Structure formats: C-alpha cells, structure tokens
Length: 332
Image (cartoon, rainbow, N blue to C red; front, side, top):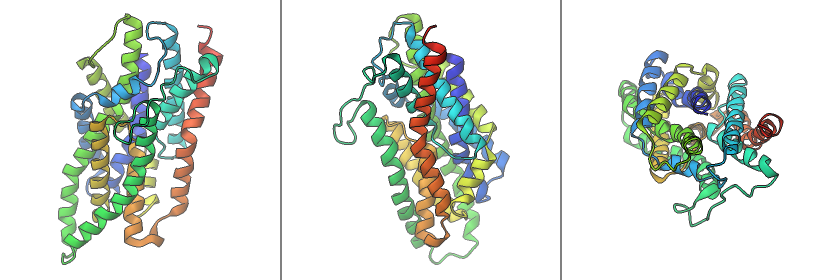
C-alpha cells in the first residue's frame, strides 16, 4: 500500500506538477531544468511543512471499518484506478486532475464492496467553509477553477494598471518576480497534493497496525515529498506546452498573473483542508488571463477538451477502480 501511495504521488507530480512548471517555462522566465529544480524543492518542503487538514479530509471520506483487512484491497483498487487514469492522460497530453482521479477511485472501490455507497461519507453542506465529506471535496474541486477564471482576469487587469507606463524592459523584472511566486505555488501544490496520498496511507497504516494514528509521521511526509519531487523530474512536456501555450500564448505578465492567482487559491485550499485540483486552477487562471487580455486569442477548443477531461475523470476512474476491485481484489 505504501508503494502504491508513492506511485500515485509520482503520477501526480508529472501530471499536476507539469501544470505548475508550465507558466515559468513557456514564458521563458526560467529554463526547463531551473524550473524543475525550483519546483521540486518547494514541492518537497510543502509535503514536510504543509499541515494535515487535506489529509484528514481524504482520510474521513470512508466509513468502512478501519480494522478490517478488506480495507487494504479497497484502497489498493482506488489507488490503481487513479494511477492508471493519470498515465492515460499523460499519454494523451491532457492536464487532467489527479485529485479527481483519486476521489473517483475511492468512490468506485467503496461502491464495489456491496454495490452501494453506504461506506461513503457524504458529510454535511454547512455553508462553504464548514462543509465535510464528499460535499467539501465537491465544493473545493468545482469552486476553485471558477475562482481561478475570475481572479485570473482581475489580477491581470490590476497588473496592467500598475504597469501602464512601463516599457518592455519591465519584462526582466516580471520574469524575476516569477521565481518567488512559482516557489509559493510549488509549496502550495506540494502541501495540498501530497496530503491526499498521506490520507490514504494513514488509513492503510491504521488498518495494518490496528490502531488509530492521530498525526502524520515525519517519515511519511519525507517519502511523499521525495515521490512528488521524482514526479516533477518526470515532467510531461506535452502538458507543459498545452497549459503554457495551448490555451493562450503566455508572456511574462500573463504568467505572473496566473501564478499569483493559482498560488493564492491553492494555499488557501490547503489551509482550509480543501483538496483542490492544481491543474484545473492553473488552466482556468490561464483562461481568465487570456480572456481579459484578448478573448479571441484564447484557444477555446483546447479549453473544451480540458473541460471534457475534467468531467470524465471522476466517473472513469471510479469505473476502473470498481472493475479492479471486482476482478482482482474482491476474493483476496
């Protein structure tokens, strides 16, 4: 189970992490290898120092008895479903959501236990910030890209107001500013996305050890941080190009606006315990910036393909996980 959690995190690194690296690379603020080193370093730090609220949210999605060994097969099928979908979307160069894939995998495997969602914790819809269970995840996943679209446009307009009298030489400083902002974005992604695997890993450790674990051990954080860093080094260049130039051709000011928007939303999600989708937020912020700059310059057919991939991820990963459980794990 630990190995599967780490493999999932590696796939998360080359899937969502490629979206994190896309804006500095495609706006030529940094080279590919400079970006990989910066992003992987701060992704690792995010795993170590990023808290545990997102992990708790994922951990609490299942009400299946944690001391029954069958829980391990349920989690294994969920992880495998998410991993397979992440590899498929890497091959077809779609910046899909690893978070959607994991949530879909958990839902599918829990359903396959007795063909019902009785073990899924739907939670309560207590406004936006106090929701729990699946409701909290749905709000986080579907509200965050809307915020990315809206605030991407607003941040870009504000930057234009500040830079209205600047010459093209300001691009040098805009590129330099991307370094700290990309570092914050990477930290936020590392904090949010490694915790999703940590939540599953803690469930598995509780099941295996027959005792409740109240805090995430440091060795779990280190392993997850290393796995995320490895995923960053396996950068998916096709996703980098699709996000960085396929939606809208990014210049330094566009990239900076996207990074400010994305990092703000992702860090906020981590603080509130909301498992957000980094790839969705970055892509939607690119759309927001492009719309504010030149609506006709946005490649909406690419945006449409991404939207379709986002909509398909949860049901397809759920189906894959359910089939894996029924065909391989049910009788183990």
